[in-house]
Image 1 (cartoon, rainbow, N blue to C red):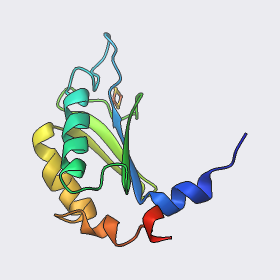
Image 2: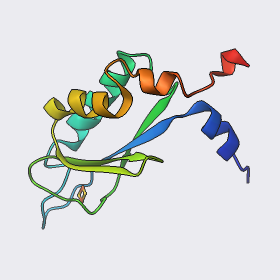
Image 3: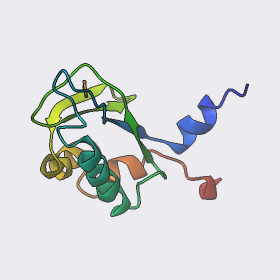
Length: 115
Ligand code: FES
């Protein structure tokens, strides 16, 4: 086992977890566009050179915010939570969190190239 917290704290400003949970008996994020929201989050970050350099993105199971109207996501370690997110919501949501050009993450992370 390796304890990698320090390495990740230096590299990452935040981690976005998007629910893509699929189930049949209740509303779920898979049926509400979870994969499309994930794609939109990654693309927004890629367009600003922040994908994986400062902000990582993962899909996850149920976050307890299930809805038929959009996916749930959380941004950690900021402890921010959203539900009913559609791909169209993603630009405004991420701009509010990270700045329109993701400048609020770039300033806070030390790149390995800076060492
Ligand atoms: S299925 Fe996504 S929050 Fe529950």
